[in-house]
Length: 290
Ligand code: ADP
Ligand code: ZN
Image (cartoon, rainbow, N blue to C red):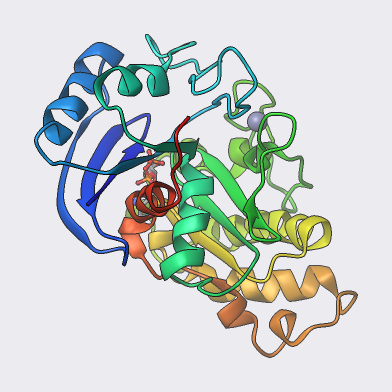
């Protein structure tokens, strides 16, 4: 029996599951203070007899095992969670192997283990929701680097005549600032879920997302790109993203997956809304004593 935690800034999901990615029991609750939230986590797992625990967390997080703040949620603006030692707190309660990574890296691993990127050694998992973030599996390993990638904050060129200022508190009109759920809501004055499927918002959204994907393809050359998150419930985005991605690459990178097979190259998560929690389960599968 394995334990999995999807630690989100809005909600926490905890689950027990097995090596095959089957979720046997789950619970979710809103993210409040760290003390209150972690108590609920501990109460859920305490009689479950889990052998290992995987945690996919909102960030930024410290993933460097040599660092004195390894396992911390670091510079988040979320009240109460700044410099919070989430892994250390869990280790106080459970003396079992654990593996800790970002929520999007976990989801990338989950999709590569049981989902759309199964059997592949590389993929990108991106979420377009309240924020935009992406995790990457590269040569079979989750990519960390200096801290960890923050692919949601890249700079993009504007959609013609889009004069929206952007909502990113750090960069205003970065990718997240222009294309996250809150950006859509602020630009159009209503939530994305209330816009019709043929609204211009979606062409614009696909234009921004496809630009980001061009950069990902050019920099990391992933074998699959998976996009989840609330905004991607707008399934009409996919054909638009495929069209723009092809258009922007303009034949420079030659591969069938960027041409005839593009609709199987950029896809919605095969694990659906479970991508995050299954990702944490995939982390648990490969957990070690830390
Ligand atoms: P979070 O990113 O907070 O974990 P979600 O991935 O559900 O959660 O993203 C929430 C964001 O997605 C909100 O900004 C919301 O307006 C937007 N959203 C949710 N459902 C839809 C939908 N069906 N169409 C467009 N936008 C949506
Ligand atoms: Zn930004």
